[in-house]
Image (cartoon, rainbow, N blue to C red; front, top):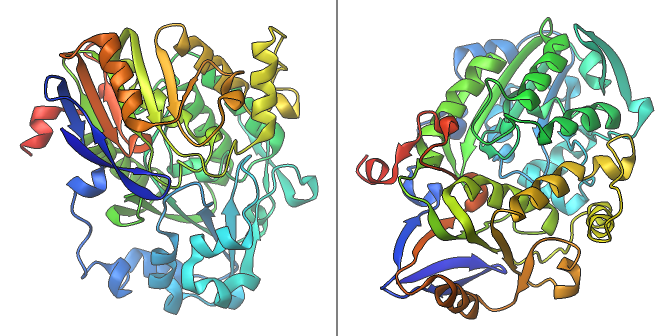
Length: 427
């Protein structure tokens, strides 16, 4: 079998022997049809509830994702633009603890509209105390970007896809931790190592339940949301809008039905091909292997194929990994370094005790020596190595755009409404 894959901004061929029992999980963007050209996102003829919201009085804050999401933000804003009073509109880029976007990243987010609206764009900084405001919640105070306090109306534009410990991206997550303080984000991320924090799960997921509790302080605000399910090329596959929670649940249900698979037998190895923008650095890779880990047998292997052309992504994360490799006690979430990846290190170490993790990338082997991930450099020699280890008739899955797809194991209760592969292929 020959499978064309994305790697290092090129298309390469991945070869698998015909003797292997191979299942191919195509990218959702390749399987699903994009919204029609007569959709309001293309025509600008807005639905009445959105049009009425935009006609409201007072300052409007539009909160958008940063460049680490494939959200087609520019498509949405282009549809809204003629309905906005830009003098009353501010755009806030939700970054959580991600590095601040540079101008080139802002141009990716806003597209050709950037030059027209750049003076109205603000970027959230979790460490800037002067840019935060205190909100009271039932579980204590939370500090969020002060624009959420001063604005009369809040419109969020985000995309929904599986998230390895929060259940899904999107929804209220763009507010918290997207626009939260460093300390509040740190506290939320500490829940990532608790039971129930997993892909596709919201009910009973302590991370998601914490997000909902901490954002309840905004429920009395005039607010609206546009939730999108997008392909890695920013094509819109599904859209929902309206109430923050209702619209989010509609998109999350679409993701469960179209981005998640219930497998009937565990695999010897799973090959995860990471698509842009999450293939840019090491820090963003965890989604891909966590999304499929439940479908790999004990002693099996996950091979990540991700060029990581921009390197590590956050040097603080690497410092944590180095401390773990030396047997040192990891800093807790009370420290800045700890908050940047303790949950990632702990989850990865635990996973590596059950199966093998390998990464084919442009990173040097020395970079990965502090992580329980083996470095590889060449695609097909890496495949040959797996065949030699597990046999010519081994059971293999190839998952394209692996950061957005979830493989649920045979006994995984969190599969929800995920279809079997056979059902999905015949849908």
